[in-house]
Each structure stands twice: as structure tokens, then as C-alpha cells.
Image (cartoon, rainbow, N blue to C red; front, side, top):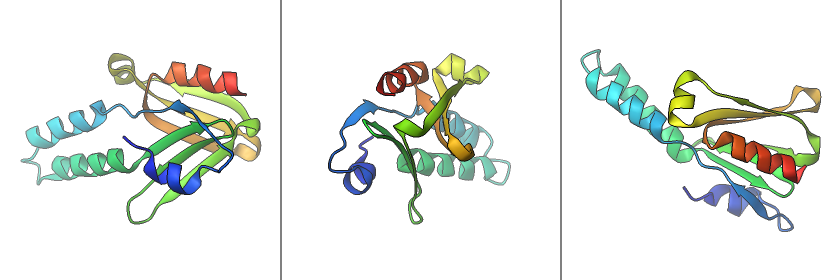
Length: 135
């Protein structure tokens, strides 16, 4: 996945990208399996699989030497970023399936209860260690 939107529109001139963050595609695969097997339920699982695919393809995460950034959306784009110096805590949450398929949610929290969540991230502990070295 190329981080084209964040690289072109959000990353500052004096910023450099430090940590590549990848989303684990297993969640999309699992949704499609359920969508195909459960299509007899009025196609609801199939629509959820399509939604998960679009979300996977349009979500970007990026860690630069100054910020953690998240972008979601297709027609209505939402970006969220937090300066590294404002990060007070980094929490990595694994579900059972996250442990099995190597994905987790990373929550960066700062002052005033501000948070940035990276969801379904591959190698979450490695990214957490990388961000901690930048702090």
C-alpha cells in the first residue's frame, strides 16, 4: 500500500518517514470468507466484506520523525495526527485472532485524552518499539 495521500498532502517539507506501517489483510480475507459462506443471509455478510475491503484500501498509517498520522475515507477523507512530543502512552491490544494472525491495535494517547488508533496493524510491537526510539 502506498501512502500517497499522506505523503502528498500531510507530511511536511521538513519531515521524513521513519516507520512503514502495514495493515494486515487477513481481516479482509476473513470477511470475504464469511461473505461467501453467509451470502444466503440476504447478502449482509457480502456487503460487510465489500465495506472491509474499501476500508482496507483507503486507510493509511504513517510515522514520521515528527508525527504519527492516520487517514481514512474515500469521498469524505479524515486525517488524524499527533506530534511525537505529545505522546504520553502507547498501548498495543491483541485479540485472540490478532495473536494468531499477527495483527493488533496500537493506541497513541496524549494530553487532553487525544488518541490516534492504528487498527489491524502487522508487527505492532516492532512499530511500538520504533516509535519509542523516536520519542
